[in-house]
Amino acid sequence: MTATTNSTSANPTAHHGLRAPHIAGTAMAFTAHRYNQDEVARALTKFAEPGFMRFAQTTGVDHRSLALPLPRYPKLTGFTEANDAYLEVAVDLGEQAIKKALAAANMEPYEVDTIVLVSSTGIAVPTIDARLMSRIGFRPDIKRVPLFGLGCVGGAAGMARVYDYLHGYPQHVALLLSVELCSLTLQRDDASIPALIGVSLFGDGAAAVVATGADRNPSGVNENRGPRVLATRSRVIPETVDVMGWNVGSSGFQLVMSRDVPKMADDYLRGEVDAFLADHGLSIADISTWVCHPGGPKVLDSIENAIGLSPEALVHSRNSMREYGNCSSASVLDVLRRTVAEPPFEGSLAVMLAMGPGFSFELLLLQWGEGVEPCTTTCSSSPSAFSAWSSS
Image (tube, rainbow, N blue to C red):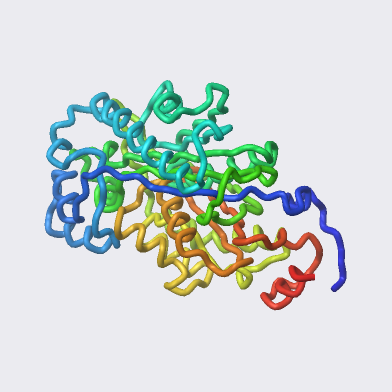
């Protein structure tokens, strides 16, 4: 093989060798308020007409967990009351998710050096992570990084920021918390198509991920250790800010969701994935596992078509959506949790990806086991050549 060194500025992993952060524990938390699709679709809008109900059955969502009992939603008086509910439930779910993730990682709260919080479905100052300090038992010198407004891309973006932090502090432990209570943003008087899609699709939940830097010595045996995070890529498509997001008004958050959302995957995703992998001497053929945000049935179909995946490749994404709906930034972390629980073979590579407001993409390259970093030389991207290179 001819070894021609690439520019390290185009290959971030070339700076670090094998110094990649590890995912040490993952967890989800949901309320006890769990309902089937018909119950939710009828309760969260005044416009549950037969045509809408038929549409709701095509979204791939069977059940959802909600922040509040269904009978309470029609009684919410406006944004203030909904946001008060967000504060109460988000803190409770965040506490549950964090404690479960720490237990999965075999770690104690005092070991966490930084916490990255992502949430776009409520407003809190102080933020949710600050409200959890004493409830969890974090050290008072913990570094807090709250991120608001990332929407569905937030879970993957949060993992990317954890990766960045742990490269700077390889002896540290980082915690990612996502809390999304989408049902509290839905407005029953809104009969727009985006609002009705939201009623049919979105659910509530919290996710937590514990990750350790490359120099962090494990505090004990951890049989649930997940993949290493090798590299990340962030992209914002110019002039697309109107594709997805919130219109914020006196009544709260009004969903903006253009019919162009699946088209964003059709038009841009393949190019982003190819460029990301090419930066590391890889191609789609080298990736065995896909950890994709379940944005909706059409979005998943577009991902499959754009990348050329079989339906089986996104089974965890579709199962997450069927069981819990689209929980915004938390959903891709649920897909990650499911993948960690049923890991691919040792040394295999995965891509974690999500799309969201901006319009934006976040991609991460993962690897299970103690393999090597992506190729930093000119090399073939075929699976057999990659295997030969990685064993040399």
